[in-house]
Length: 237
Image (cartoon, rainbow, N blue to C red; front, side):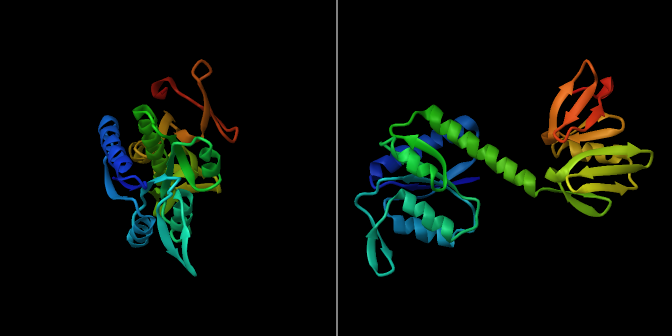
């Protein structure tokens, strides 16, 4: 589920963006909803402070009519300031998408917490591409958090390069070294295929994220660290 936070000093623009997000989510088969739609930066700050989940913030950079309380009084604030305020008070994986009718603000956005920048009026294809990129990034973050249990140990999926087999034993080759377990590779195969791994040989399972080349003619798989592993015809991807 993607939670969208919309901030624009023109309520009409918020309405347009809400409808556009609804259509984009339907087209991309993405589960998303507008959790907050406002013209007031203070509401965004309050929502962020109370929210335990990460969110996708669509922030208009130029907020000419709005103010937010600050220590020592009030000061003008724009969309960039809002993202800084949210980021400084949270360690959640939030995404910030800036929107502006002025393309020159894109440079300033790149120096803050920008994930993307959309120029008004943006095309639906641009918004859909933005949402797809967010989903891909979220998938990568989730993969890095996944742990695989092998022989009682819980190993991070992203740190396992490949697994080799020798009879009843399997050696797990990680970025930090090799661990040997009394478990047959066939017992690991089905479970690991669901976690982004590939069986390439009766003796080898590889993590697809470490594969840099696959030579079918030579029946050879090359990993990012230079490791060369054989590929059998039976398991040829």
